Length: 472
Image 1 (spheres, helix red, strand yellow):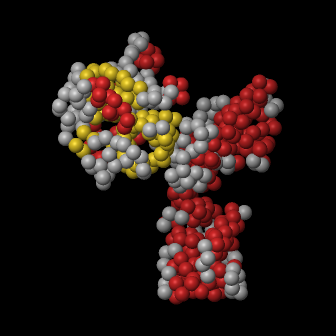
Image 2 (tube, helix red, strand yellow):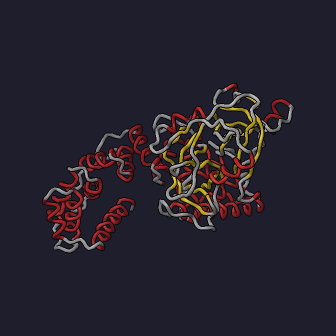
Image 3 (cartoon, helix red, strand yellow):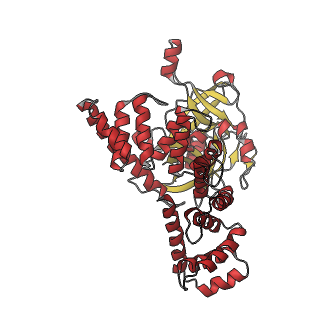
């Protein structure tokens, strides 16, 4: 069924091509000139009888010409044809050859199918490590069924590495894309406490979803667990299943959006952060703020804009976003700070509760190192809350001296030391931002400002360039 769906996809691709007004004649002229896309389209039309009398042999010849030029759809078409025996005799080795060529160019379906060939030993010697390699490449591109298979490999140690936590990670990614077998396997992990804390209610919830999606194992487990769970657990599990389904539908809505399309108001962000808009339409923030976002927007001047990550430094928790057509932005000037120096930050703590107006807090540099004496951070006394992350830390001249990154967990410190700490927060030093900024064309760093300014006027000017980041 999977492979037939892929063939249908290619068929629709050809129909869509025709809707643009292309003709067999124009395809033929371009194909004769060596245009690989035209060769593929012409060959496909002959193979399927679209606009011309069906002639699979002639179509196959044109498609092979396109495939030998590296045209991905043509390579994958040949791979499927040899694998399924459509128009040609089944030839598993030839199928593997073309799957590999497409997979090496990043074709996600070819990567998954090549993994399957190694998994089953079809057209190539069975090799679980190679299967796992190709499943992983497809899984990392977001293919749900590949994520499920990768989870199975980790759960059973089939690729030489048994890791229950990794199995749960990949099952969850696939389950959230409505892959029913992954949903039932994830439920099983919660029942057994494998790779995740034991939780019968959560396990039952995933089995409810798997059963709803027609998975036989999910149906069996759902019905079996009814005998062992209390009525309150069953009710809680059903309620949790509804929550999970809402989350899944929300993710589908977000993934369906175009690159620059802004989510509608009824799709709530999954997280918030702050950032600094600088000249050229770039936003400086923390990597952890946007790391898990399927879509990121910034709010500026009462309007939302689509943003994309153009550069990142996960090791130092820094990211640079690009926003098109956004007004404003300040010239970027950086500076070091000293122990005891006055600093201030602006951002959007808990905007869902405290509103969308920018909030100002002030404090001082209370330490020149962070946790464990790491030189990455300044310790600051300015009060911070969730949503401040990624916001700018300014000195009294308006220079950026840091990026607000973290706050010390008071409850963990209380448990560890018996002391309830307050206003112990951290900002990444601007020095660590410089190498990343230099890799992005269009960003200019201005000399440090040293002329005294009125603080109220400075805050009024800077707040226009402090933006709220919404992560979906």
